Length: 103
Ligand SMILES: [Zn+2]
Image 1 (cartoon, rainbow, N blue to C red):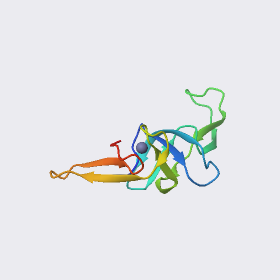
Image 2 (image 1 turned 30 degrees about the vertical axis):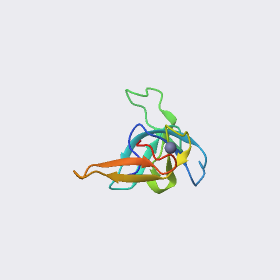
Image 3 (image 1 turned 120 degrees about the vertical axis):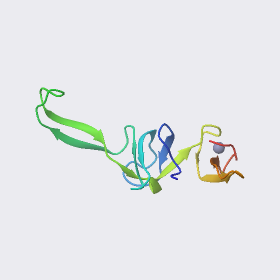
């Protein structure tokens, strides 16, 4: 299971967008990549289409390696390492290693 999921707020730990934070739009756990709102913007050239009648250059989020992202803990409001709490039934819950709350 990935340490971040869709809807989380994350902070970028390295790369050109280091220090930026945003909301996770999508996660691909098998590829270990995620898309984060307004982070790692990449210019795309769009051809004229019904969605973009004028065509031209648009900026879109590019995917980032999950290892570069830290979860922004909603409780302590800090980028945190994630731990796992496994119940007797085998269910995994994420916990913030900083404040120990489930997230
Ligand atoms: Zn926390």
